[in-house]
Image (cartoon, rainbow, N blue to C red; front, side, top):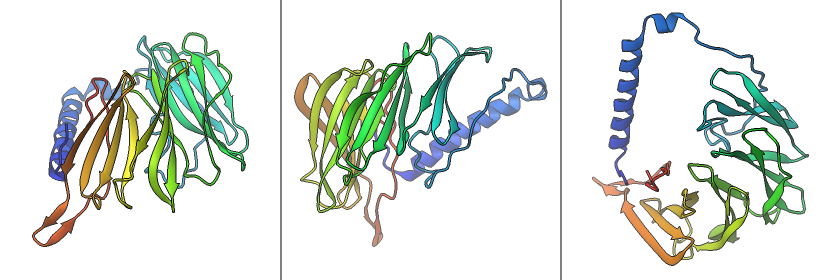
Length: 276
């Protein structure tokens, strides 16, 4: 589904906000006057140069069987993954110490485990590593390298499927600082590699933006804002077929003599592989 006008997005936001506010007003009363449940929780605030584009935007994830898991920042050199039940009782806490130059790059939860991805630039190479934690016990597996790139390359990145069972890690292949292709690897939740793939962008010219999403079935959705930032394009790649499906829609252009370009974009992939 593609909605090409900002007015529609704004209308949708107002509609949803109105429903939430209405529900809050209708439900106001005793519920606002009583504390339902609480639990002590320690957290060291993170310092970020860009709070709008944080690597980990959600640090609390629901668990299908009940409760939730938290990625907790303890200090400059340590995080922890903690699981709480529906009664806010902490079931386990597992430390995630970080080496020099290492940061958290990904955080996801499936029905059976939590997966954490870290990025480290050692000066000799950039490395993405992943470890998993058992939801029942919090036991952590040793970190596994899932991608390596040159220290001079753009920072590599990752994305998880909505259900947390698939992971895609990628690095950018550039020429004269322009992205020409992306080299990616797709993994299952046990960090077994399913596919290596290269996405080619030689037809995109010199000015475009791109990112990758992965579905619960492992299909990859490569999103592009190109054509001088006037067109949205989605390419779908499957692991079991060579065919690539493409859908594009123009969202910019010249209107009333005024050039209109895409300033920013956000994509959301649903469990049904519908991309908004």
